[in-house]
Length: 375
Ligand SMILES: Cc1cc2nc3c(=O)[nH]c(=O)nc-3n(C[C@H](O)[C@H](O)[C@H](O)COP(=O)(O)OP(=O)(O)OC[C@H]3O[C@@H](n4cnc5c(N)ncnc54)[C@H](O)[C@@H]3O)c2cc1C
Image (cartoon, rainbow, N blue to C red; front, side):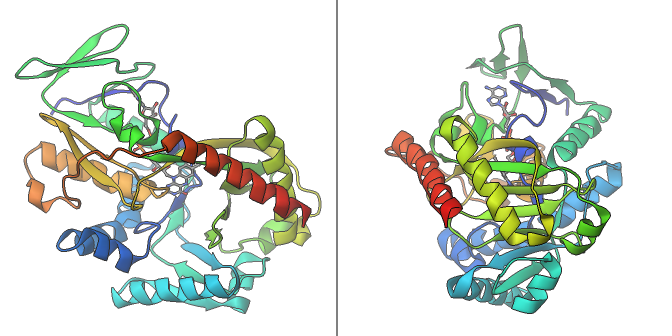
């Protein structure tokens, strides 16, 4: 097939270039909850497919020599307090029942893997890993170009009309004709099929990166190079990059008052987590929008004749997005029937009070960080 990609901004402008880089299997919600929500056959089918998601990402990276700081040491989901411990134990049990390579660590083992913190336990997922996400998506774009795809950046899709046999997709400067359209705009969508974005509630998430740490510190912090996040409602995440910078993130938008509140909180939290750091200085910070659906599960939409979309990754899009991309390619090529897709066709949902709920997330995260910074 001849393939063209129209991108409104630059490759990796959306979630793909802004995320934490945790390549995790499954979704955020528990495997049993996922299975119960989707029912048979989609529930266990999706779990099985997404369980192999990181492997698919690693294979692509290795096959095409994509330089994106791949670490295959697993990830750590760290339990906070007794409630966190219960959650992690439940997750461990549900994954182990499905034969997944996950290991429940006690408090001491967790402390050794992290080199700090005071977590009650952690779930080590040996299937997982970390990447530099922008380098991954740019690498994929390079591979697609080499395979003959045409990529047009700074080409926002503004119009779409069905000519009967093809779609005519228009930008400010030109148009393309296509038999099939795959809408992959997720939480950043605007233009003709922006209802995909409107069925999601935006959860802002930021990251800061420290200066490269000394060799001594690098040996004590995440010595095996797992990526990590915790069970708090307003969670934190952290990983080391190849240059020894700590990438530290949490819920919130780095704008207006939030920028200084979240920065101050991040400095204090990092010092508390890793007292050996001493002074914490950040080299950079950024934030992005995570698109949350009503049941925390992604969606497969048929938006029009030959117009399809997977979206709604709920903060877990690296492996699922990669897997769904190749599933959609097979579907468009006629190699996979609709009934065999990992998700059922879903109507687009209307979310009530979306703007108010998004404002609440921003304000809530700011408040939590403001209070925590003072404790
Ligand atoms: C801060 C943050 C942290 C995250 N952390 C993780 C993590 O650690 N692990 C994980 O697995 N997932 C994580 N996620 C989720 C993950 O990043 C996303 O699910 C994933 O990147 C979605 O990929 P995508 O290609 O579907 O969409 P995106 O990467 O968001 O790309 C959509 C693109 O569509 C373009 N676009 C929009 N409208 C138009 C138009 N009209 N015409 C042309 N182009 C258009 C946008 O410019 C954008 O580049 C995180 C997300 C965020 C924001």
